[in-house]
Each structure stands twice: as structure tokens, then as C-alpha cells.
Length: 258
Image 1: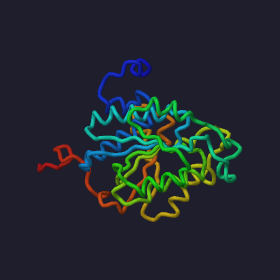
Image 2: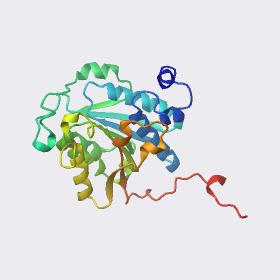
Image 3: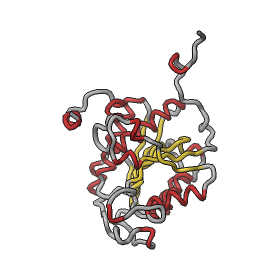
Image 4: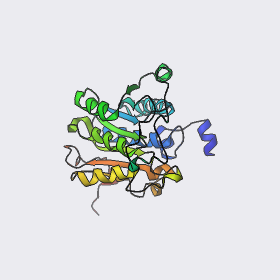
């Protein structure tokens, strides 16, 4: 049934996101959750980002997903992709898992990819340089979703510069997907290497910002899938809108007198 549903994607966007139907269900979940948060906060537009574009299939999927969810929610969604453009850089030590990845992996054909993009913006260069400049220059809607696919500890740690801008550059809760905390099995992922190490150190270094997995997400979904264990949220507890109530004021959520 699910295979047939993917071939013939009927039903509302919200329903299909909930059942994981379509391209990159992890991207769809994060983008939809971010757009829904923005709508409840009265924010008309958001940004969604893929870090580590490689061949470009993920960025093309993100572009398509953003267009569909934007139309369904009424929230305008800008899409950005960041990549070195020359394949992965040289590993900087054991935390980058050099026994799994090496320099030059996942090189892209930037011209071919740009010819297929319609609205997404592709930014090439070292993330330690491009992301701080992106935040510093501004001019983009608040960030609501980020897909981290940088593989290395060092690149991921530098990418957290996206959280360092003023509060208007982000939603109070940024949905994050970390691609490299499960596969490949040879990585033996742990909190002292790779993306998990970068997450642990970020949480140690920030008192009022925390990256946390969405607790028991798989039990809230109709079907369990590995990507549900890779979904996190960056909580910005000092964001001016963090404590704004998002619950609809309907009879369902109010107590009536006996």
C-alpha cells in the first residue's frame, strides 16, 4: 500500500508527511514542522538548508518538498544548499572518521546541478567561511530546518555557526536532520567522533541553546523508520518567541465547566 501511495501521492500534504510518503520523508517532516511552527507564530517565510549537497539529489528533493509544503501552508520557503564543490576536504583527525571518508569523496558537478535547480541557491566554499558570512550578511528568512550531511566532525562543528546569528535569523526551534549518525556500520558512531561528537560539544559549550533528539518520535508516527532517530531540534531558550504558545485556542484544548 505504501509503495502504491508513493506512486500515486493522493491526500493532503500533512497526511503524506505523517505517513512518510514521498521523497526524503525526513526532509518533508522537518520542513513541514518548521513551516507549521512559523505559521503558528505569524512568521510569513522561512529558510531551509542542506549542508553537504554532493551530487544534488537531496537539494533537488528539498526544493520540490519546500514548494509543495509552502503552497499547502501559505508559508514562503527559501532553499539553500552549501557544499565545498570539490568533494570532501582532508580529514583533520580521528574525530572526522578517516577510516570511513577521505578527501575528494562526493564531488559534485556544480554547473550540471545549477542547471536543474529552479529556486534553490547553491553556495560553494568552505563551510567555516561561507556559513558565518551567510549569517553575517543576513537578508534571508528565519532558518527553520537544516539537513546536516557533512560527514565530518570538523565540518559539522563549524556549521553550527548557523546558530550564532541574532534571533531574527532563526525560528525558536530549528528542526535538524543528521544524516551521519547511523550509517555506515563501519563508522561505529559514538559521542566521541563524527556528528555525535559535534552535537555533544555544542551542548557542553552552550547553556541556553541545546541540540536534542525528538524524544520518542517513532512512537508518534504511524510507521517507524530509521530517519526518525536522526531528527533533532536546536532549542534556543532565550529566543524572544520560544515561550509563545502555539496551541490552537479551540474547545479541544480548553476545560469546560461541569
